[in-house]
Image (cartoon, rainbow over all chains, first blue to last red; front, side):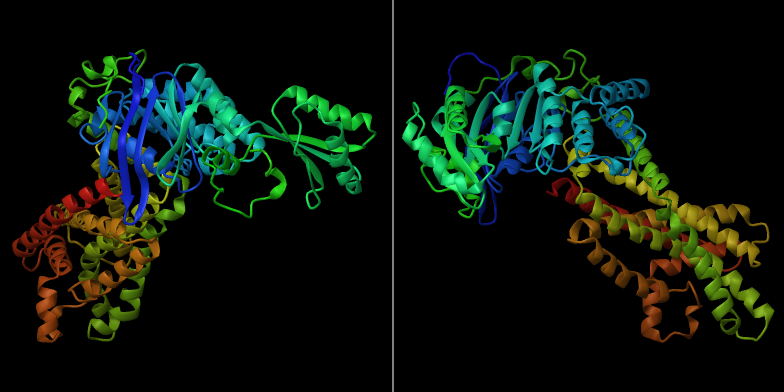
Length: 333
Length: 293
């Protein structure tokens, strides 16, 4: 534990929250330093949302302590609520109200004057590119617009700590990028953010530090590059034009013995060859080699390790769902 | 437990608010208390929300607009002639005089019933989490909802009176009495709201809320003096109708608007019921709302 004089926006010690038999949060310690983004990574049911709900005073902990901006979640809930912004897993805006009315209402609930609330609403609509849709009811918004409105709603009170509970779950990749851009802007302004996510990619893109949790317990924590180093690099997927060439490609790679490249496998069902890589040089070398040998390549893609693979690498335990697509299974090597 | 509790310095002593450009925080915010004026402002912002919801979804007013019309026409023209005892216009006219004031309390109850399903549905949407994680009194969400529902009751009662006047209801100039009856209906209806809010918070689905509400509603409405005088009912039933608050509300409205029959006694019982129900159920509903996860 760091003893240096850092200021923690969020401090959690020995936090426990059980629902009957289920140990949703089972003894978690967590520090989020001011002005940083802490990613809490874990699969469904790991306790991420429970943690966020305790930290936003929506749930009472069974044991342990938690403070946000110096306020205790149990003893000072009212003061604490003044310092936080919450963007839940489900867009928490009023669907029947327009975007502007939603933001205006929240401004008024945060004790802004009528004019100030109106001004702040317009400001945030502009900032989150919602000005055009300002008058439409939120129920008519697309998924991405809804999340952006939700983010805007959380920013109205200029919170000291912003909770983003799975901000992109259920969004398509393009919309996800849109939301990430907005979150990155928020982060760039120096806000403290607690982000929960199921996606390694999201955590890597947004968070500076990571806590990996499973079944209510922390299984790994540290800076993102440290954890990434533990986990390994990316997976390269190469799809030949002719699926019959899969095994020949694997053979060619094995034979060439490129520096540090090993463990290429062919997946007949997916019609791709997967190669674990740890650097851009390896990526270039593999693709270059396949080109030289005259393989006709239809598609190339790289993937970050999935959550399952992260778990496998960090804990040495098998990931929870075994029947996951087998195309990405070699990374942890 | 760890001792490395390094408090954020700017928030431990001074008010958490006045950081660069923070939302202005009322004095006294240090203890996190919410002042009366702030509370009223929150409630009005939430009333506005509920009103905008109705504007966005006008169909949600259908019950308040149509129920009084349908019930009036149904009872006046289907049962009116027969219940009046005779066969002809005059007995129907007498029944109109009896029925319209009686149905006012029923409007209050039927509208109040809808609040339970509304609250229940609200809870399955994230917006409730947002409200509950904000620095507002949690009760203000419920109070705002009640204010709007009382407004809907007044609409229903107004429609009822208009339809009543159209079919020949005559208050013989007891306008003040009418206002009194409307006020009493609103008071009674508001107290019922808390029961249905409590139901909405307790039951797991909106459908269940509706089912149970209906079961409560039917015997109370018909086991009262709303539609017919209770004189012909058997003793056990009369014992029930005599304590049924809907009977008191109906009798009060008749006394006030027609200037005949007892007034003081039913009005007193209506007030006792309303205040009693509110004192009993509102705190439970609010604390349940606070603790709901």
